[in-house]
Amino acid sequence: MLLELVEDRRIASLTALSRDPALSPFHARAARLPVNRGNVETIVVARPDLVITAGRATPLATRMLERLGVPLLEFEHAETFAAYGRNLVRLANVLGAEQRAAALLQTLWHAIGADEPPTPSAHAPRAIVYQPNGYTPGTRTLVHRILQYAGLRDVAGELGLDGGGFVSLERLLLARPDVIVFAGRRDAEASLAEAMLHHPALRSLLDAPHAPRTVTVAAHLWTCAGSYATTALRQLGAPAR
Image (cartoon, rainbow, N blue to C red; front, top):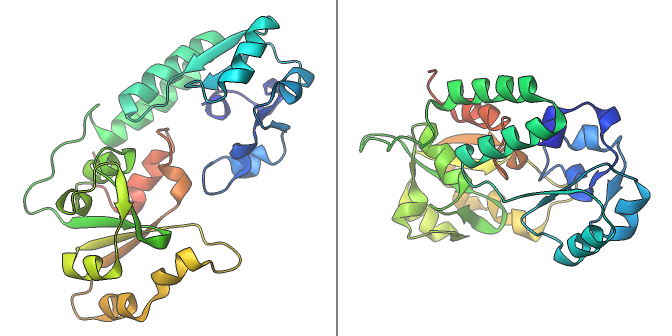
């Protein structure tokens, strides 16, 4: 949220995870900024006026910073866009970035239409997100909600996946989804986890007549709720609102 709201000169330090292309849509920008690993030493050296934390991710460091008198602002992880909106407005009010937050949320609400995603019709295309190692996010995740916003039925529900789980190629072939969503990131060297994405059985499914439509969505677009999720919706082919 901080990178969404303010310019670089106002940022003393970021979490090192902000440079990970799989997690952060701002990884290129974060590469130009100082980072910390959540330990007190690297945070104090940056001399921040405010430290933003998420859901007690580093409780020991948080307690030590409190004892040192460093101002803290804590947020819970947002699993919905409504929660993200509340967090963004709260942070914007502290940073004096209310207009920027309002513009971001206006774009987001225009794209998704409502706080809660509509229930897809029984005739909506059936989609599955298939990540390295066959991991599929479940029905209690942000990914599931974004699929619904895009007008897709999530096959994860049919497979009994709530929080997420691993789907074998056999189960994928039997499920016969209309849409398969792959992660956009690929490591420079192929990993064992990604090898199954190139398995001959999967290739035969994708090359067959009436094959599922395939979509590639960068993983960092829906790892966390944010205004950048509108890009994921466009990539999924969400209808215009």
